[in-house]
Length: 106
Image (cartoon, rainbow, N blue to C red; front, side, top):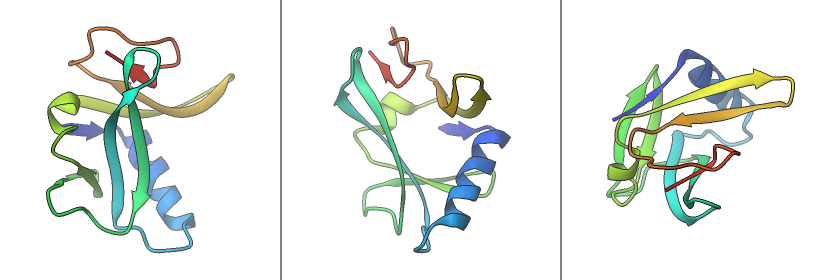
């Protein structure tokens, strides 16, 4: 369903190691909004919700709610470091368009 590159896995593991609590994994979801129609939301959470799909990518648990699952199917998430900043990028085969920031799609 979703694949995290080695760089993304390392970034998530680093965030988990630095967290004050003990997160169980990474929640990824899609919400209406952004400049292209949908926006990606990510964050560390203590446990999955009852209806979440739970997948493991590179040893990192990823939780995806049922509404977001079809919108994220086949997505590859990377973590890039560049001169203009670093952050997660999304290669989503379901996106028919996206905004220039890469955090929103339609």
